[in-house]
Amino acid sequence: MNTPNPTVSVNFIQNIINEDLKNGKNDSRVHTRFPPEPNGYLHIGHAKSICLNFGLAAEYNGKCNLRFDDTNPSKEEVEYVEAIKEDVRWLGFDWEDRLFYASDYFDQLYEFAEHLIKTGLAYVCDLSPQEMRTYRGTLTEPGKDSPYRNRPVAENLDLFRRMRAGEFSDGSRVLRAKIDMASPNLNLRDPVLYRILRATHHRTGDQWCLYPMYDYAHPVSDALENITHSVCTLEFEDHRPLYDWVLANLPLMSRPRQIEFARLNLSHTVMSKRKLRTLVEGGYVQGWDDPRMPTISGLRRRGYTPEAIRDFCERIGVAKNNSIVDISLLEHCVREDLNRRAPRVMAVLRPLRVVLENYPAGQVEELVAENNPENPGMGTRALPFSRELYIEQDDFREDPPKKYFRLAPGREVRLKHAYIIRCEQVIKDPETGEVTELRCTYDPATRSGDPAGDRKVKGTLHWVSAAHAAPAQVRLYAHLFRAENPADEPEGADFTAGLNPESLVVLPACRVEPGLAGAAPGSRYQFLRQGYFGVDPVDSSPAELVFNQIVPLRDSWAKAQKK
Image (cartoon, rainbow, N blue to C red; front, side, top):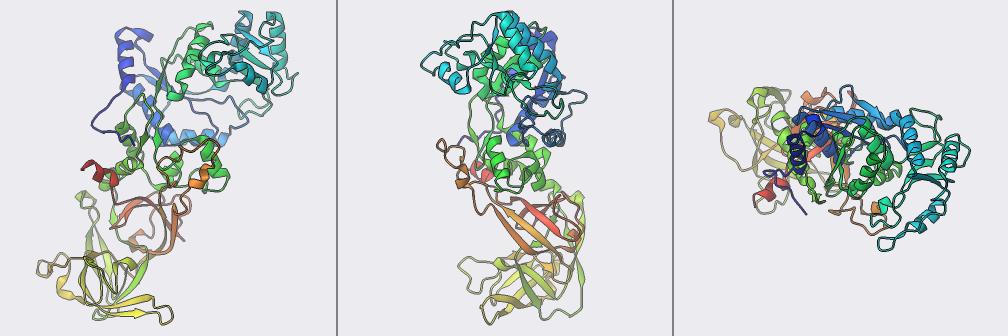
């Protein structure tokens, strides 16, 4: 696995822009764009592209457009448009008044297509999709000219206009560029520019039954918006000659430059929008915003911060070669961001009742706890302490192993911010033998913060007062896929077979500090000794408090860097 070094920034795109500015190209302007297709929700890979395009514009005091590539109405929905706009805003970027759609240019795109026909550079082809594949050739064999390649210009214009008028059935005819069927680049072997498609468009309705292909609409849209640097991912590198061909053969005033960079591939997940759609529509996850998904909406719901995602995108840099980034680096960025901003609280996920037999019945005292030792400005809070408490089931062992420093019969531990207690008796279920309660005593001379009671013991546990704690559901998350690179599957294999069946564990009977009872949706906390958790913005309510695990405390990426 290729793990980026955060101290090294290799940005060849900046070098290209600097050279263009040095030579006075584009009137010394920098104008980029982010052009998503509204056929699904954005994922963390799109976040890298968003940060790069908007970031370059900001760095050079330029502009960045948000433009939707809405040229395939059969897969596009307004829901996706609105979700994409929300994601871009949430990440901290503003397109100002520069919101565009490829559909804004449908009339101009059509006129430019007629221009290509009139100049002998485009023709209407009647080959079926299968026949076109056969005529196209292979990587080692040249293609063959379509029998319709040399239709007269007048006939091509007539057929193309009738295609627009809806005279022909879907898929029966296409408009193709006339380039070179023997080109070693398959993208130049007379690519399709327009296809017939009867589908209601989310903006233009049923006005069109003829839609441009991405490789044609994209360079024209870039040129019409006076884009200077069209930054896209590496899979479009072989399409660049076609991008340049379209610009060179149309009467356009602007000539943008396409630049490709390596897309983001993240371990233990998939970044294909098609596969993500399969997970959603197949019910493998609970929607596009499922906190296990690599979508921006899923990460937002889980509790990730935009600052952490931007930091991650900055750390991985911009490269020319594809690689896989360890997801632990993303989690590390989240921890670093939350470490200073998230209040520390105590939550017991699997409660075990503790009764302090020598603590006065009915007495409640308030103990003082810091909200965040990394950020003293966050102040302190009061914690109720009483005779009956909850601790974690895992913090007790009746027969403790070696080097186990938590609670066991006859042993002492300190309760965080409170007292030292000693286990005196174990109560079990008579039928199952399960430990249901511990009878303990506390040492009143060991109150935390009191110098006179600062007696040392090896174990410190978190806890909550049983009478005061708020009930909560907690959702624990693991990697969505078991394999490090689930995308590296044989062609045709069922990628869902690699899903991790333990990617979600729901704990329905947790107890949290009483101060969390009114926690606002989206609030983030560090549960002491557990990890970072956020209040679910969808399912949580005053009647039922629901927390999502954001990241655990263990930082495998930071640990690996120290080796």
